[in-house]
Length: 333
Image 1 (cartoon, rainbow, N blue to C red):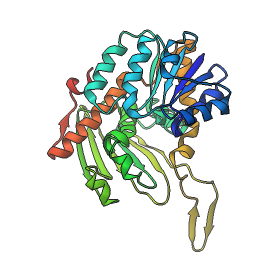
Image 2 (tube, helix red, strand yellow):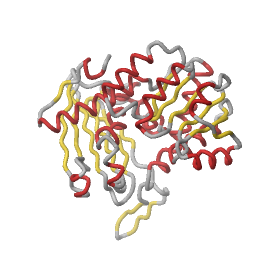
Image 3 (tube, rainbow, N blue to C red):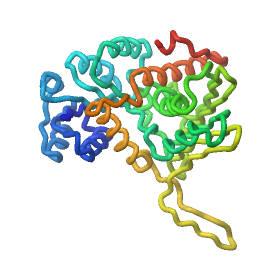
Image 4 (cartoon, one colour):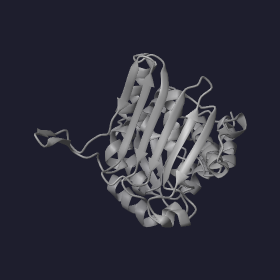
């Protein structure tokens, strides 16, 4: 399977490495608005740097991987559909839910696999937790808690174009809740600016808790903070009728020191590249499975719309101070 990469930045480089690890896929071209970045990555992998139009017109390219800036995602998905390519796109589809709905309609007519980049679904820890939950090892899942704290906030310049915490950061956690518990009935959001006043001045929050309520009474909570100085804190816990399941942080090392002074261990790994590098490789192989072997896409365009719809509901709830129902109008389903 020949693949072209849109985006030669940090996440694009991660995906380039993932493509290389699967013997069934071959990275053949890269494009980026920053020509120097594309040329540097092309030189590293011995491929060609070219324009987006050249990639889309090249019939020898089977699939495109969209890892460019968020504002390009929806247009590139649409262009990829018209060009007859299999498509892998990083989250989100778009910052506009209305535009995401348009892309969903376009996707229904496409006969090639289309997959959203929700890499946390492919983390071995979370996959094992889901498998145990589905196997009934703790009975029926009743409460879900997702914790996601970044080690430090991004620059305010990024915050201003990110779409806000719910769309930019918590969107992964919305997808994790959907992955484990399905879509909720309603969303109740709380948020504050406690980490950096400039984030508040930019119109965003940096500390948030969201409660998702399900038709059958199950409850999920998500906790986000832009600051956890001890490292990248990523945990999931499910309380079931017969017990609990918990996926804990990955640590810098596994050494535990026990003395009369206490018991200590290493800190969590510092950022997402260390924490989720394995997940990116597994995610890519799942996409190749879909393209080469015809297996189901594990995270489709509807999943991308669903996560964005939950983010929209959270924003509405934060503004109104009231729960917001998750309707078909929101999800486009």
